[in-house]
Image 1 (cartoon, helix red, strand yellow):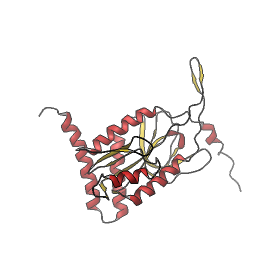
Image 2 (tube, rainbow, N blue to C red):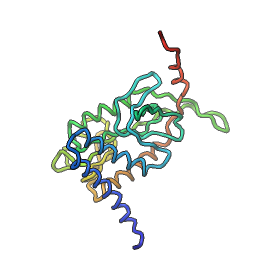
Image 3 (cartoon, rainbow, N blue to C red):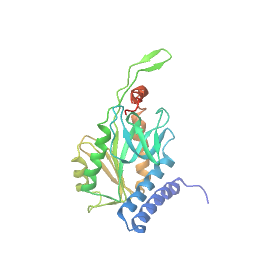
Image 4 (cartoon, rainbow, N blue to C red):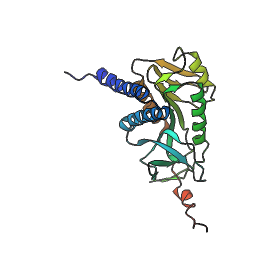
Length: 240
C-alpha cells in the first residue's frame, strides 16, 4: 500500500476519537473517566507538539509564591524555561514558561465552561517576571509577558446541535477566557475577536485542532526571559 497523507491524518483523528470513546464507555466512575480523557489529550500533545513545547497536568506558580488551581493540560516552554518541579507525580511549572492551559472533560457544557474559565483565570492572574535579553550587540529590553491561551477539550457536546449558537454564546459569555478548543466527536473552535468564534464541523476534528493549536503557538513566539533569582528569594532559612 502506498503512503497517503489523508489516510495518515484520518488515522490520527480516529485513534483519538476511539480512545476518548473508550474512556467514556469503559469506566463507571466519573473521576476515572475524566482522568482517562485527560491522559488521551496529554498523550496527543506530548507526541505531536514540537519539542520546544511540553504538555503536562500541573499547577502553575509565580515568584510571589501564588499557585494556580490544578490545570488538566499545561503547554509550557521546555527549551528556555530552566526548571519544573515534580514531586510524586505532582508537577509545578513557573508562570513565565506557560503558553496555554486547557480544561479537559468528557463533555463541553455551560457548567464545565464556567469551571474551566475560573481555572484559566487562576493562571492568567499570576505574576510573571521578565528580564532584559542580552545579545551580541547589547541588550534588548524586557519582553512583555505574552497572552496565555485558554482552551477546552472534550469528546462530546452537551448541546444540540453540538456546535450551534448555544456553544458560541456560552464561549462568548466568558469574556475571552477561551481561545481554542476541540469537541472530538464534532469539530473545533477558535476565537476570532474578543467575543466571536469560528466554529467548524470537520471530518477529523482532533487533527484539525492540533494543526490550529500549533499555528497559534507559533504566533506567540517565545516566552519572556524568566528572572530565576526572583524564585531564589524563597530560599530562606526555615523558621523554628
